[in-house]
Length: 120
Image (cartoon, rainbow, N blue to C red; front, top):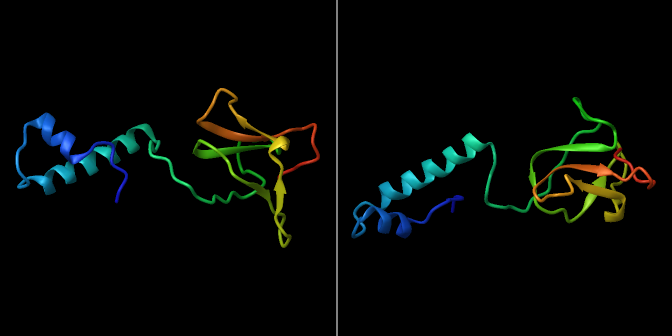
């Protein structure tokens, strides 16, 4: 099921639509409006769990201890660094900061420079 920002029954109730004759059209319009919201805001408002991979070092605008994210981050389960042809190393939660510290959502991960952790 796609990530929709409104439900069919709520839309039908507000619009005064009775019966199921127009369910397909209502669903299509909800889907289109939800994707338009994503495009306009350049964000997604429904969380998902996934594994993300980032190339290092970053190609633009970053210091070596800062990883800028391309999407909002709500929480982080495991952070790993992996040098080429090496086994991944888990970076302890005490060794990085999710920023800005007023989040979530977060837009970057910063290594605590007082630790021995590093992105590789």
